[in-house]
Length: 466
Image (cartoon, rainbow, N blue to C red; front, side, top):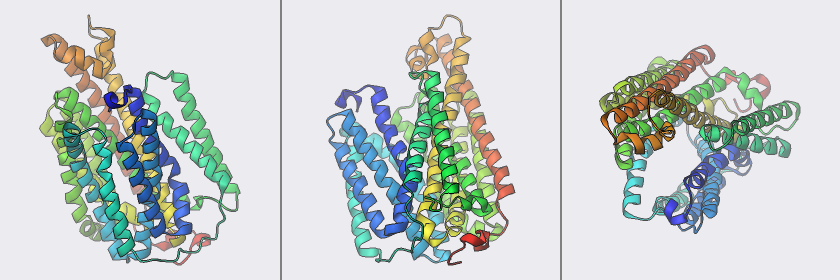
């Protein structure tokens, strides 16, 4: 990609990050639109935008056009996600909704299993645009299916008026704060600028919260956060995605820098995660029926913490079998907890708020997932750099993992040992961080989530169609 577009690594990385920035910052606004115009129409618009942007991305002549196409994909995805959950809320019975949401992680697992391997094969045999072009037939099938299988439905009446001030504050706040998270590990930016981005984003989001509490037409009813069901489920998903996104990122560092695997081999190395996701997704409905949603979600988070711990143990001497066991546990944890957590979120929302409410959850997932990559990645790179700095006679540039791999991994025995020990030290500390966050999420879920959940969890002033 860099060679084809004559772009440097930072430019390509920004094009990749543009998707997440636009996706996360547009979610709640898109969810509000979905609630107003209906899920069927919004889904078709989202898929059309994503497909058109993918087609553009496959043939762009410059990196600036690639950034534009990735942003378009982000906008399309921002409409797709709340539309799907709105359809689930409107078209399915309670039991059907539980079954479908339980299978959601299995679909994710299929993507985790196929995505890296298929992407590697496409890049090996074709030009970089093929990884975007493959989205086009998938989008076409989705549009045909929507037109023929999804019935037209009049949207639930939305009594709240548009909130343009809240929309602008939220868009700016999430975009700036997400940028701060993405660039937290980018040494090319001065520390004061990275800190300033984070502070500016946080202050804007505080301003949004103050505005929403005072206005009589909020973009999203913040009263939902006073319900233990909604808040507990969002906390569970946030902690889980922090640990999972960070683990997927670190697993790539482990296999490529620690074991010397190719990108294609590293992608295949994630298969245990996908296997765990699929197995647990297929069984989580039965488990939830037996022990309840709260215990199932907490157990899943506990398995995620155990998986991070096993990965940390694998990092101690860079052994893949133990890493595979850790990835399997992480997959089992996600597959077990995501379905019931999503069900709790969807069922705790008024029908008219299903789109914007599910968007809030998705936004938290994206921010906490990006935070997991940033924080665990920062701990990894810092731990590696400190170990290399303590080694005598090594060049300063070896303090970067990628530079160190080129300079040391294939060098003399002592230099290669220093590099491997540095990678091991950084990965160990990073996965301990992930395990700690997942453990805190377990405690939070046990404290916040009620043992039994129903629409009575919604404040009386907000209960509609209960």
